[in-house]
Image (cartoon, helix red, strand yellow):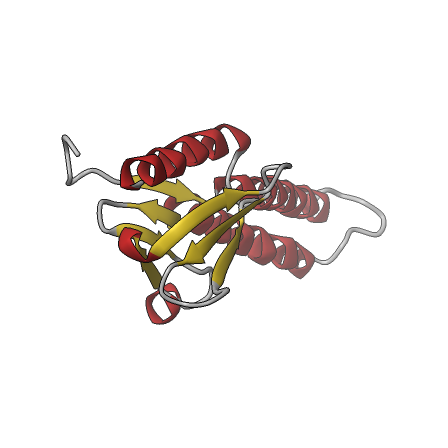
Length: 151
């Protein structure tokens, strides 16, 4: 490898898109409810009602930032590093390239399975749904390139 310190990082940015849109919608809803409560209407909504969508919108935007920034898959010279959504530090998984016998992508491009060399019929199956479509092509090219170099 010409630059062994480099790595490819794949985030859950496709999954984050829904949370970005939902968070922005909820913040706009909170602003609309706040404006309606200040207007001189015959039956305005209570002022505290805007706090619920404001809180949910802030939580959705926080989750969207986390999904956009933190890695899901990391391809490094050592191997494939898998970061789960819940407790990534505790449930982090490293698959060294030396233990991967084969890497197969599903025909529809939604699944990636690694067959492990040291175990009989052992596979690690990953969904690629959180990764955007253009990044999946890059992932496929990178994994296939490493597997071809190893054979």
